[in-house]
Length: 185
Image (cartoon, rainbow, N blue to C red; front, side, top):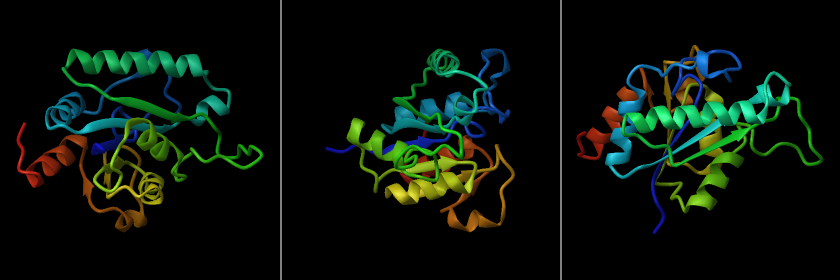
């Protein structure tokens, strides 16, 4: 049976937005995020991060730097009793052009589709939370059931109407999701 998932963007949703974040010393969670992810875990949702990391393609940091920070985030979440089931990232700069183009950089759906294939996820029964309209478009392009924005990252623009809703933070979104499902946590 396919599993339902909450897809999360990283920068601006999980951590405080800092351009080209890759150093552990610069990382800080958006308030309430470890608890929000723990509550999703307890309610039976898979949690998958899908994040554009163009700093790799631009040469600002390496795949190894990204992996170190990802391991740190996972450890900090574990300390709070929370788990991300998988992390997917696109290392390409916006102007990167492979022979057939990049299929993973949001708004392209590649990361979401790969996660669904790898983990047996029910896209129509899943949701995506981001801080940019490109996140919403990626979710729509992949067939994710509902796509939401949070205000904790980038300033939202006039395209917010493309989202199924806008929340102050991931914690506020999780409150809404669990209330709609008749769950508490």
